[in-house]
Length: 263
Ligand code: DGL
Image (cartoon, rainbow, N blue to C red):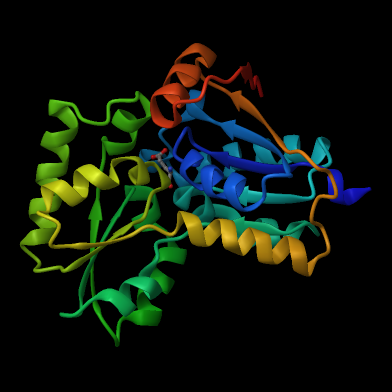
């Protein structure tokens, strides 16, 4: 019975939990395997090759577990490899990418800022996405090195995260943006801080809920919805399982078991 097989979700670390949360709300009876590849993170300052290699290892594992669908809850990995996976495998792949389209609906002055990792911003997929909308708006890309590492460590409101954000938000402010797209799944966890530091004057676009809705649509379309009455999530980490457990507790206030992912 394919329907009761698990859904595989991965990110370079805990960022993808922002997407997982919405998936659990919308699809509470699904079985999920979540992999945080934090032993090989951050992806955002690594080469495309590194991100592709790690993603391939994780996909191979998911396939060996017989998953029915895969969510790449990471903008950086989506940009690097989703097209290749879609051509290579039969099962559905859902990815995340900076929400430029919803930002266009929100902006009033036509200047939108994209906060993302350096690797996402350097990718061909991102360049193509920008090109598609370049007639309609001015897109100002802002790489945010260091931000995901802080969030990964559970540091959501420290002097260091304030310092980094001040630099990135000032740079965007100087471009007169009125809308910011969160182009990295980790950044959802500092949404309130970003909102506070921009005096609530900026519209923030976070697509994590839309990704969960997309997954729900795809599962329905492919007739892959679970028939089980209860769901579950298994957490795996390629980094420190203790640290990951502590960060998950810090971010989501849930106490979960985290198993090692040694590949
Ligand atoms: N959470 C990832 C993303 O959405 C990347 C963070 C990182 O490892 O640099 O892009």
